[in-house]
Image: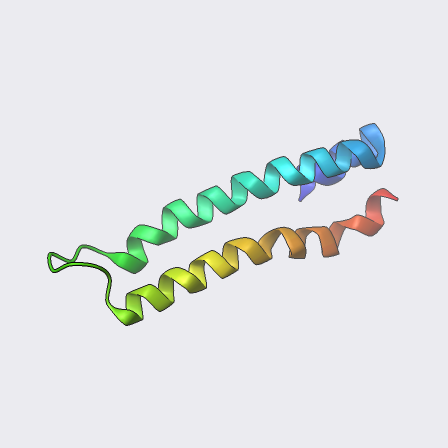
Length: 79
């Protein structure tokens, strides 16, 4: 969030949106990569269990929701 706001203050709204897209993509990648293995774990029998599948979908939803939260908290600082 801080990087997006600072870039927006230095380069205007165009810089803000570019920095927001980059930081959001990096944050989503980090969340999915770090929480995917903890929610799935290691199972020697086939695919993930229904509970593990739900946890994976919840992790993906959380990762997709983070950029919206960042935008909602910072868009008024740049305009």
